Length: 447
Image (cartoon, rainbow, N blue to C red; front, top):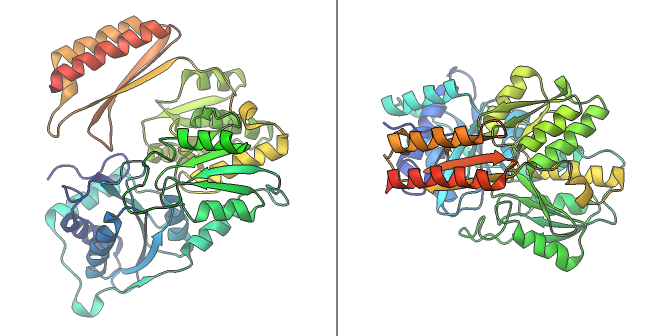
C-alpha cells in the first residue's frame, strides 16, 4: 500500500484513492483501534468538517469505521480545524478528526487527526495507523459498538474560546473590518466573534454551497478582500482559508501582508514584553531571509523546520517556544491554541492595532523582504521528477549561481503532486534565471 499520510494528514481528490469512502472507513477503524486501548473504558472522538460537499460522505464513512471499533462519535458539523483541536482536549476525547483539504479546491478533501492533548499526531503514530489500515482491524463485539450523536454547541464554545484570547477590557469599537471566510468552516464563527467584540463587520465568502470553498476568495485569493477593503474604506481585511487554520492580512490600502510580516510583528512585541519564550520564533524553510535578518537585528533567533505547521508545532514543543508559523499564514501561538488558528491570529493583530493606534499598513511592514520567487511544476502520480540527472545538474548549477547572496529550496509538496522551486537573492534577475532553469529541467523530466 502506498503511503497514506502527507505533511497534513491524508489528502486527495474525493472518490479517488486514497480519498474514497471505503478507505475512510478503514482509516476510521484503524485509528479507532489504535486509540481504544482499554476496552473496558468509554472512548470518544470528536469529528469536525469544512463545507465541502464530500464532507458528508467522509463523515459517515469515518463514523462507521470508528463506531465499529467501539468508539463513541461526537459530530460537530462545520467548524474550523483549531476548534477540533480545542474541543478534543476540552471535551476529554481520545481523538479529534477534521475532514478538510484546507486551502485546496472543493474537489479535494482530507482527514487530519488530533491526539487527546489537542495536538496533531506524530509521524510515528501515523505510521502505526497506516500499518493497521494495511493489516485490517478486527471489529468490536456487537455489544460494544459505539454510538454517534451531534453536538450543537461546538461552534459557540469555539467562539467564546477565541474571544477569551483577546485582551480583557479591550474592544474593537470603531474598527471597520472585512472578514473573508473562503466559503469555508469559519463562515459563521468568524463574523460572529468580530461583531461581538464591537467591530463593524463586512463579510465576504460566507455563502458556502459545497462547491465554492476557496474559489476566488480566502487566504489563497486575498484580492477579493483587498478590493472590498478599499471599496468600503475598511481599516483592515482578514482572509481565512477553507478550514480557518491560516490567515492573510490586508491593510487599509489593499496591500497584502503575509505570515512572515505578522510573525515579525508579534515576535518583536512579545520580546519587548518578555513573553517570547526562548527569544526565538519557529518558522519553516519557506520564510523569507528578511525575517531572519529582522530577528537577528533584535537579538532574536529564527528556528527553521520543514514545511508544514505540524513540524513547526513539534519544534515549538521540543524547545519550549510559544510562537511560530508559516509564511503562508499558519500562525501558532501555543499560549492560546494547539495548532494554527487564523481567527485567533487575526484578533491578536487587531489587538495590536488598538494598542498601538497604528494603521495596518504600518504594522504589516516590519522588514524589507529579500526578493523571493516560487514556481510550481505539476507531475503525474508515480513520477519521481527530482531523481533525473538533468534535474540534479540544474539544481547544482542554480545553487552555485546563488551561493553567498541567497538560497535555493526544492521540495515536493506533501499535499499536492507538485514540485515547488523557490529561490531568494538580492539580485532578482539572477534569482529568476536560477528558478527558471530548474523549472525547465523538471518540466522536461515529467513531460
